[in-house]
Image (cartoon, rainbow, N blue to C red; front, side, top):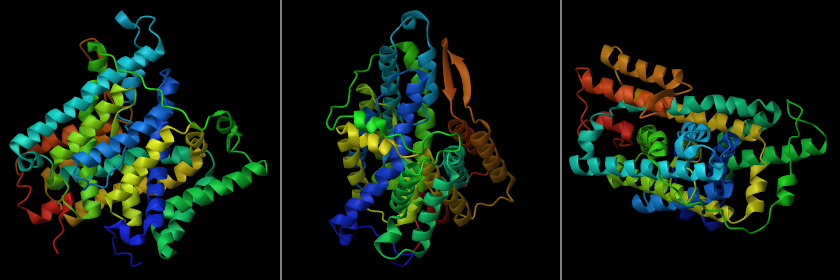
Length: 451
């Protein structure tokens, strides 16, 4: 298949190949999606992996309905809310004094429900005033560096995961590169899935030979698979509401909404279609917000559009949203099969790291490509200042920024700070001549390409 040839209707490949492509998207999102409940559990809150997978799938399908089945985006669990979960786990004042961890999680989820509803408020504003006026605040000089930051913020986790076993990580990365460059036919469009499968086979062989990870731990631990059942309902927990929890969790929506807009720009630029105008940013925000609120209402984490799957779109060049919906169906099914969830959960961190080297780098490369294609003039001091501040904020605030609001601790992620700083600078500095829908060159960042 020609490198430049994109597939927009995967049905032409036939059902078996479509099912395999869906599997590739599921593997791409799986590591990060289950990592969120694993990290939240380390804080002491019992966020469940099955529930997380179930609502990642349901939320994605819900998002696709809201977006008129047009946008090839997967919604996995959001890392932006981790700081809020950690704050909730440590809360020990008022009603939270001596509270069971499971009940604290319910209140944290209540705060996330409100965060999801804030998406709907922004969607309504965009619907009322029009996307053109809103996007005037998000020209390429703002969205390009933000997309760069999305990828680079994830880079340390790729290195951290890979460093647990560099041999496995390099096998995964090398496999992806080989099949992406030299693969033929179907093999060329599933390099990530092949990277995962071949590296996992290597992990099984290395484990059988008694080899270990860099820290001496076993490469594979299969005991959880034996203990897990074949069928089981995800454990749902109804959210509870309290002002303190809402003040901790809800403001994080600012970060998540900016990530959403950046991801929509990245997906639009990757696919070459203007999703911000059609089906519209208000629809994609509504889908993301409702998926987040629904997940949290029953004890799941916040959802967000996944950059990992955008990376898969770049590599596979299969842009049909139906393939993503297949991945969502797989995720829902895994929510009911504890044993299968554990099988995939045994995937060594190093393999996730090797795959992430490619995916996270691709996201940043899209941001750089958009800045170049849009011919953003960095001899102009205004553009230079905006991009510089976004990059430093996005990468410099690695721990985020924590402050007190109404007696509760609120944390903004570095990406949220970068987005807010970029949007404010673009609004106040003179010389903003960008108008969405009029300037053809500028709009290329949103995925409109001249024929």
